[in-house]
Every structure is written in structure tokens, then in C-alpha cells.
View 1 (tube, helix red, strand yellow):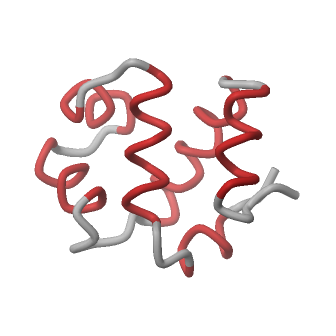
View 2 (cartoon, helix red, strand yellow):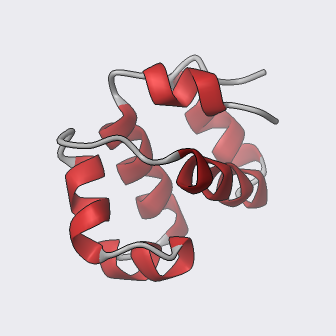
Length: 82
């Protein structure tokens, strides 16, 4: 799966990341640790102030893949399914 170009241009990136995080049952801090970023970084993504880097998007893709069908449903919701 390669959602990089689509996700970077996605205007609802914050909501997308928020939904992935909730489905995984993670706090912003836990997601930040998994992705190797800071808590404020995840917070800024979810609030639409910043977009994730290419590396972060690649890591998010891996998380989405691990979610299986749930991840695919979220991708479809945001028109990111391939």
C-alpha cells in the first residue's frame, strides 16, 4: 500500500490520524512513541496545524496495514484505499 502522496495532500489528515489512533486504542503519547515523534507533533497533526513527514506517513501506513479490515475501512472513508 502506498498512501503517501494521497495522505500528504489529504485535507482531513488530522481526522484520519485521530481515527487510526482510536481504533488502535492509543493515546497521542503512545502513538508518538510508536512513530518516534513527540506528543506535541501528534497533537499538531490531529488539530490540522501540521502534516506528517514522509517517514511518519510510511510508519502510519504500517500501522494501517496491521489493522487489517478496520484499517481498510478507514482508508476507504478517506478515499485512500488502493
